[in-house]
Amino acid sequence: MMFASDDMRNETKRALDTGFTLIETLIALFILAVGILSMAAMLGTCLSLMSTSQYDYIAQQKALEAVESIYTARDLQQTSWSNIYNTSQGGIFLVGPLSLCAPGPDGIVGTIDDDCTNPDYVAMPNAGTGFINTTPGISPNGDAKDVLGTFQRTIAITDVPNRPGLRQIVVTITYTVGALHRSYQLTTDISQYS
Image (tube, rainbow, N blue to C red):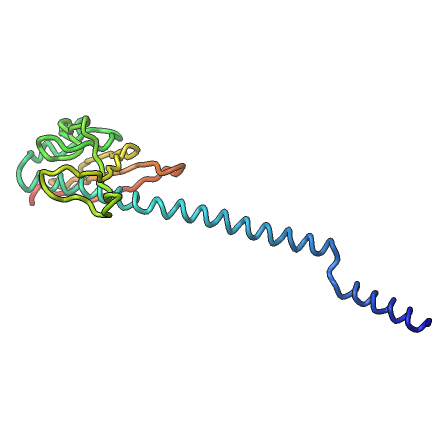
């Protein structure tokens, strides 16, 4: 009988020596929980950055739209070369960050005649059809309008030193998506001659 109880004691001792203790198990669970929570936080950050990508694209397009309207005004002679400056230098382009407004009668964005009673917007797809109504003269019929209320545009036009007839245009779009403050800057040159 002594041999049986010695065998049981030895077997129990071996099981305790080779198994996990409660403290080891709790430490492993704590490390696992920290890892899972870190992954969840990273997933949340990634999702918020993904949601900003469409607004990043809109900012790029709005900056490009401003530059293209300046080039078009020069090429079609809608304005003179001396007017392609900021108002602080005697030109027609407003100074400082301004809300995105619909272009005024001259068709040039960022000028004094812009229609700020009609804010710029992006047409979103109709919730029912998934398409944007593009039929001229017909209202969007349920198409959503994403008003670009947090977007601001700054157009800065300066002479390029030692290069007569050449100016630099810097268009900066700033906007807020959720808690993120973002900006996009487009820099290009424009010459007096088209």
